[in-house]
Image 1 (cartoon, rainbow, N blue to C red):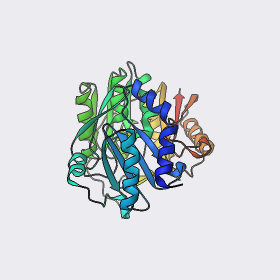
Image 2 (image 1 turned 90 degrees about the horizontal axis):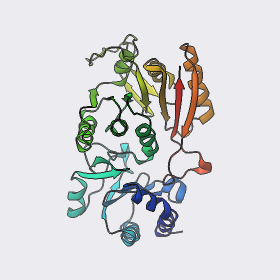
Image 3 (image 1 turned 180 degrees about the vertical axis):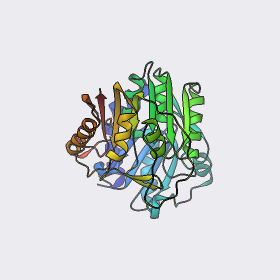
Image 4 (image 1 turned 120 degrees about the vertical axis):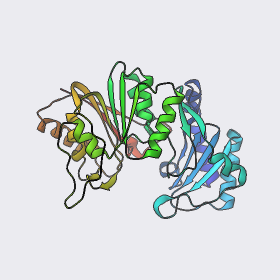
Length: 335
């Protein structure tokens, strides 16, 4: 099948989903998930009044881009932004026409379940400012944060934290190393008038989390520790842990394949008895049950107990082979 044909088929399959999104004041979602729907490395998303086309393996030809654009325009005549990320380090390599370029670099406001988020489809980073597959996580947090304290780790642009605040949280602490991401998070808080509820902490996750857990801050061997914000030991009603696959700093190494426990242990200690921790792992090769069993063992080693578990599955705009999505999200109740 041609690219136009598989994109047309994907849009048709999403007809009921798109109508549901419209009814729930949501204008950002995936319309083509290439890995599963027939064109590996090609994703197409709606962000407000724009179609965002992204390639990760191979650049689209002018003919292919024109064909996809015609299919999308027939569905809705939005701005079309093409970000070619097939080069090294996934940086956006291609240039756009003046109109598309100007639009892509302009701040827009998108909506998810009536919550406002800032969007800029080309900026100093690589990824869009809202990860659409995490919608289910934001929905869970919004529905389960009333009168609670919430810790949002690796917060990026604070989508989870904003959802918690909109759900009635008493206090939300967002922690991320990127000043750019936190600035977007602050903008999101302003858009939704929840600034007073939200705290933004620019810090490496390791020292922040270990201090909150009441543990000493250490570092990797022979690494001089940079300065970091000082935080007092605090436990939260709800902790959200969504680390990147791999990251390295003077304080430690984030490794979702070999050492999830390095972050999960202090996150458990920062969770109140009777509270909940939402754990995320986006590595496809990590087995769901094996990972879950390791989480339970880690909780028990801290003298705590898992009292409940709930898996959160991505929405229909993110199909997966055998319903086994690479992004795994589980909510653990802990005593």
